[in-house]
Length: 172
Image 1 (cartoon, rainbow, N blue to C red):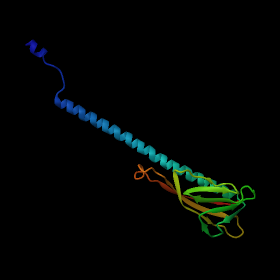
Image 2: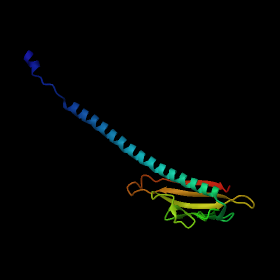
Image 3: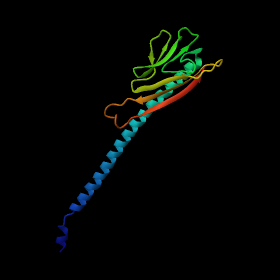
C-alpha cells in the first residue's frame, strides 16, 4: 500500500495550465495597453506644449514690440490687416514688420532679413492685427492668430491640435 502512494507523480493538470496561460496573457495584454496609452499621452502633451510655448512667445514678442514702438504705421486706425508695421526712433529697427510667410510668423527689423519666430512644427493661420487707436491717444493694437501643430502622416489622424491666441498692447 505504501508503494502506491509513492509512485504518484506531482504535476499540473490541463485545466491549471490553461488557467495560468490565460491569466499571464491578460497581464501581458494589460501591460502592453498601458505602455501604448502612456506613449500616446506623452505625444499629446508634447504637441500641446509646443503650440502653447510658441504661441506665448509670439504674443510676448508682438506685445513688447508694440509697447516699445514710437508709432503704428499699419494698420491705420480702425482697420484690420494681416501684418503689423511699427515705427521706431532707432534707425536700425525702423520699420519693424510682423507678418506671415510660408505659414510662419516672421519679424523684419529695418533693412535686416526676416527672422522666423516659429519653427517648422507649427503652422500659423488667421494672423490679424486691428488698430484700436483713437484720436489724440497712444496707439493700441489688438492681434490674434491660430497655431496648428504639424503632424507626421502616421499621427495625423490621432492628434490634431490648434489654438487661437489673442492679445492687445498699447504704445507707451
